[in-house]
Amino acid sequence: MTDPETNAPASGAVTERIDTLLPTELVEMARKVLDANRAAGRTVAVAESCTGGLVAAALTEHPGASDVFTASVVSYSNPSKIAHLGVGSDILETFGAVSIATAWAMAQGMLSRSDADIAVAITGIAGPDGGDQKKPVGTVVFAVALRGGDPENIHADKKYFADNGRGGVRLQAALCALELLIPAVP
Image (cartoon, rainbow, N blue to C red):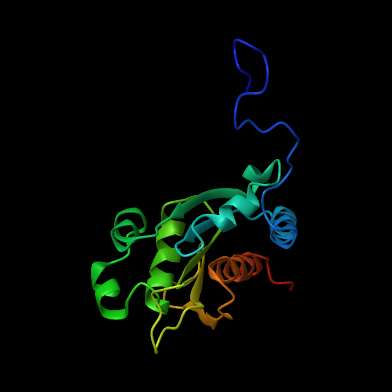
C-alpha cells in the first residue's frame, strides 16, 4: 500500500515479506495435518472457542489448504455456540461452556454445517480470569466428530494445560486440536 501523493509506503504499511505470523511449531503441525489428510483423501473443519481461530489460521498459513480444510466457526460466546453450531442452551446451562457435552455438540454442529469428513471442537479457559476450583485456567476440552460415525460414540477429552499465560494456553490447545485431526495409522 502506498501514499498516492508520494508513492512512498503508507504509514503502518508492511514493507518486508512476511511468510507467517504464527509460531513455527504451530505452522509445522498444521502442515502435517494437511499432508496426512490430503493423503487420506479426507477433509477437515474446526469449531473454536478459546483458541479464537488460531487453528484455522495455522491451517490457512499453507497455500492450497482449501483442498483439505473446508470450514471454521469461531463461537466464542454461548449465544454464538447456539446460533452457529446448534449447541443446545440446555447443554450450556447444565454443563457449562467448558465441558465434554458442549465440545461434543460443537463438533457435531460443525460437521453438520460443513462438508468435512472430520471436525474438531475446542472450548476452554485461556485466562487470566474465568477459572475456578473445578475448572482452573488452562482447562480445555476437545471433541472430534467423524462423518458417518455413531453420534453416541463420543470422542472427547478434557486436558489441563499449564497456566503459562493466555497465549501459552491457546497455543497448547491449538497444537492439541491439530494433533487430533491427524488420521490414525491402520
